[in-house]
Image (cartoon, rainbow over all chains, first blue to last red; front, side, top):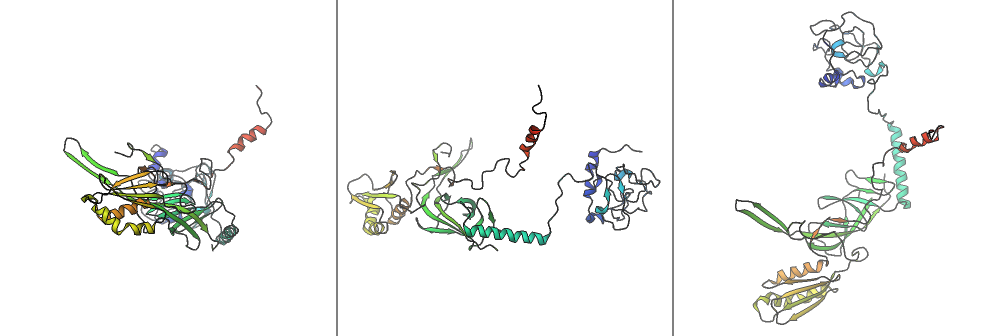
Length: 266
Length: 157
């Protein structure tokens, strides 16, 4: 009888080697092979005693059909040949097994004693009922619409796509673009690509943009200047290699005047 | 020099320009040129052709024209925050001078040095700045409170 392999060894062979019932999924059932003798017959992972259990050179462990022992945590590769109906080719132990028999019984119908490995270490979330979810969504949308209509918000911020960059912007703040706009100084501009608008209590997230009838972001062009002369120089020592280029970019400064939202959510 | 070796400033505007009304920041423009020298030819042509239209279209800028003996023709721009910028227009064409004067008119008087950040805001956070305890359940301090309320606290010394 070879010595039992340590847990890190089992981890190397993939998650299927570890006795964790929450990792068993019906999808992988069709692709499983008999683990005890590693023959290629596709076997479902659950509750069926395999006929090829005890045969083959890789069969280890007891060769007599033992009854299910609730305290056993059989390691599937090496002691899966206990003849209990649910282990064997199923590959998963996870505490004691009281098999609900029957072909096609899903893994989740099995009763599993609670051990440290019988349930996943991450929290299990239950998805809500879709009808309830839609009701909840409509309620939320109504409430936000009401809040917008009655004006129950303070300062708004928006994420705006401008000059190939995204800026988080409120009213009264300044933005510098490294290019010229065709607008003159003092012109009022509307920024149309708005990705997100938020207030203190709610946020409106666009997929990817918000509608033009929902948000209005206005800005004024304040200044059209040039940048400071940036020096682009390359130099390799002892090679007589030097290049110098002075780069002056046009710049535009915008002042965001206002962000307005309108109650037309649906 | 590098950005680190030269002076720098943050993006700003002069007296919150643009919030209420936009005000052109150029206050005074003085064209100084010689009536005879060859380097002032472009300046003389500009004064003949284009300066009147410019002055009419920018009523907020006061334009002075000074034909006098000078070392070289220059244009002096004075801004509302007191900055004075002098640029030479020697041996330049009329279009060049016109472009330069338009550029001067659309600048504010702030220094042209490295700008550290391309944005400026007085309200950086609206929904509250993140700290490690936002979006965490607020039961962390409650455990100590339970302990305090149970009998046998403080433990006898």
